[in-house]
Length: 369
Length: 264
Image 1 (cartoon, rainbow over the protein chains, first blue to last red):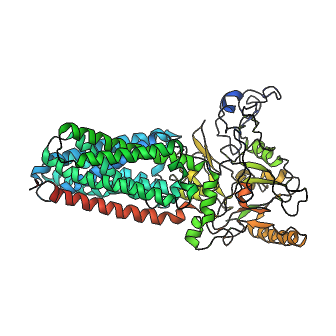
Image 2: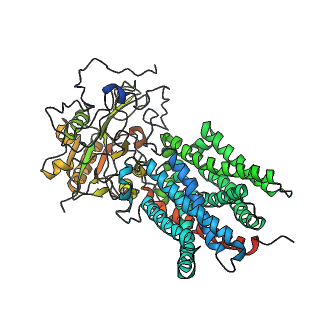
């Protein structure tokens, strides 16, 4: 089967005003799709279409597909979303640590609290910017807050980010003050910790709550993976930036627990996905498999290096860098393997035939044939 | 509230003429998807998408199928469309409330509210809704909401020359479809069955307002065998998130209370 697209360039003579072939000088757009923006010339948008058959599908009587075409439409999220997953996680976990550090006699921890609130405040600003960047219609970002909708994880996330922002700002600005303002700031700090814990984990819920087979199979482990990776992110960032020995001992403990759990969660995710072999494929093959292994290797090496007894400054920086890279790469890899998974119709079909579709909820599979 | 309306697509009557695709494009004033040759049967539309709200699948498989007698070969057509699920993944995941349930029971995307977040796309277990790159918004079949308001039937059903696409009250369609299956079974087509006609047939979506009569496995038509609205399982994820959040807080407090001390 030849692989090149043939466009019927001159077989029709479209009115080249837009891709509807409607001449706007004599006609009006009032249909349900009237708001769809046409894409300039007929040639430009033709090039963006689905890929033409490159590999001849192999029909299998017992494992059919529709010419090996995808069942699902793939995620449209770009670089800003995995970046947000990382930054949002870092922010959330820093707010949790900041809240915990406010407990008891804080005299020796004032700098740490301040740092956490600074990361929290900067983090929510960057997070919001990243989310706006990824929207198809950034001007309508506030529509996220026009409803309160518990069924939509993304709507819950918007409110969580909103709450975290207000509270992180309050803690950052008011806690250094005196008297009543300080008490308000102190309260904001504690409340920001609660919202921060939600901010660091809800992205895992959001990703798992999809029809993408690999993400769906990982829906219980993703919130855990994202949460503990957020702890690890804070730990490794402090390894890179903090000089005070006491602060570092404290944040290192927090981060090391996170990093160990991160590695464990990655192993669990891979095993859970492999219950249906086709579903785990993107974690084992191609670019996805390479990235997944690399992320685990970076996290593991960073962890080991951080645990070695003679902790020189250079070793600390290398271990912090490796750990940070591992966490960031994990976020991007989860995004990538999800996209690959969405392109594989057989992943969905096998998953549902194996009883991991609605049967998981209803206890029986309803498929007739 | 009007009665719930829907489509019954009887694929045994489909002749693959694509009049539905054309009628849909024309009535709704949808832009084209480019002029491509896929080399894949007579299907150059490929899949439902932001500006493709009907898609006729052309299935040619070297596998025998009752009651077709052309040797070891099955030849099937099916006009695919948004299923307007009773529990709709897109609607439940929409963070802005842009996707609503209309008085006809259909699932409708309000184009002036959608902010293009893309969450509905991954929440649809059928791969129906998609975002249009040019305007950044999510689009799908509206069940011809504008036509229903004027007491007209959707453009695709109106244009279908063989009544493969039937539009009406969901209850009537279900009755009619059951009768049709019975007749087909009588005439020897024992493999005819309804896909997604009721909540019992498809518990994951609690039934489709646009359901199908199929002759082969759903996968053959690029339909999932046991689809499930993701939100039906989201409780597991929230529980995992809650446990993780609690553990994170515990570790943080523990680190603060004990981690700062110099090791002996």
